Image 1 (cartoon, rainbow, N blue to C red):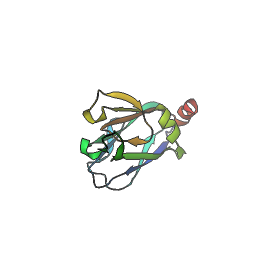
Image 2: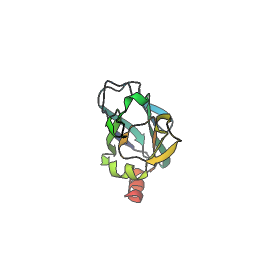
Image 3: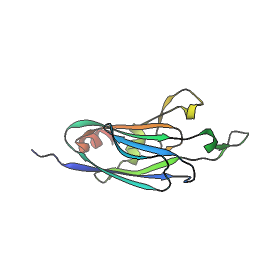
Image 4: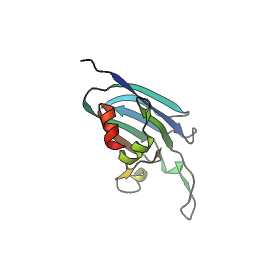
Length: 146
């Protein structure tokens, strides 16, 4: 029996390319992308095996400093630097909505609060990691999570 590969893809877009925000993407403990200063939109593509198994995909934002977020005296954010992660697909199937319901965003508000596990809504604005766990064959996992 032969195992087929499936494609993973996503788009990563910085909201402010003058601020040196770093991003690391790790699939099953192997770094598939790393850049300490993402200045333009990244189209990430990676092939994975569709054989039976458990997988973990993480996006890690690093290098964000408090001065990268401008806040008024009333607490309103007027400008910020973050990553928008979108167009997440497995084998060409759009996962944006599923990822928002199952992925976890672990961060500590850039050191200003205790670490939390939060929902992921497509944006990373604090140093931390978004973790997506899924199983293959991917079509069974999709059916379980739709």
